[in-house]
Length: 410
Image (cartoon, rainbow, N blue to C red):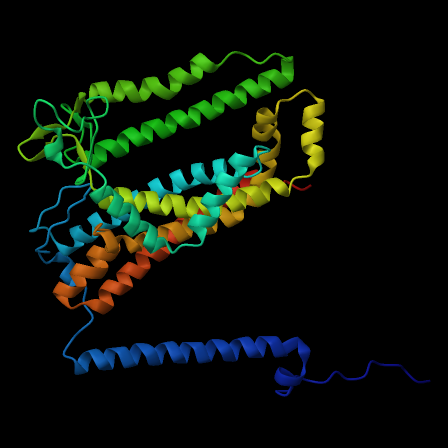
């Protein structure tokens, strides 16, 4: 009587790493990783060897040395005796400022232009098309320089506001637009909680953000109440109070008051001085990026089936209400992913600020600091790390928002 047994299995052979499809992809990845690590180690070793030949070392101690230069636009206290590290911080805050302002204005302009490009009014649609095509097809640097030239050449000097019959006047007796920049009222505090004005403003922003979150919770509560009873409670007064009262109380406790700009000698004093370089860079970045966002918005709207609009019209909704409540919420699922790329592009394009003398991170850490200390490798590494971290933060926040609006599948 014979017994049937399985044939003995073959052991592992080295040739399987190449000829067996189960292991070939893994082998290629391991070899590629080893080669990449060898290349990276060679680059590091070669850089260290070249630095030694030049009599240099790899050190970040220059960040604690006195900078010796001034920065014209700043959000925190700084002078020429401050360290290079603080100068870099001032530049980073200036970059964050223009990036935040640019993303906000570009989004508003892009949404408006994208919607109006689909208007049935021929003139409005053509004007928006002219704006989009005009800004998209001209280099950003030219727009920055052009707007800066208009700011410096097309606006009056401070001396025009002087005399019994001045040739220029302030807007609402509080805003002065001159060839040296724009002067607006400033808010100061008599009983501030922190010595640094930046920390006081961060506290105010935090309280206002908490109020916005509370308003969203009120809206959610009203929606749940409406779904349960069929009657939506009136919440506008509660929403307005929650949004304004906490911030107003905090500012009163801090002794907030307005400091209006006034002509003092040959220039304006008091208030906040927004230099022409900041305004030119902000407007150019916003208008340029807004043109690209307009096309993204237009494409997202066109991606929504016309049946959605027809159904809304059949229910008696007006075109404006249909766009706000039916079309745009669905179009966000198409708009948000490419919108993230535009926000990243605007943030990185802010490095063109050096063309008009706006002192951002590129001009301070990646410019004057490197020239004075000779630490070009360390400076560029820090500058690249800053843009990398900032881009990842923007991408992460926008991806979280994208996940909240995308279609949920079962």
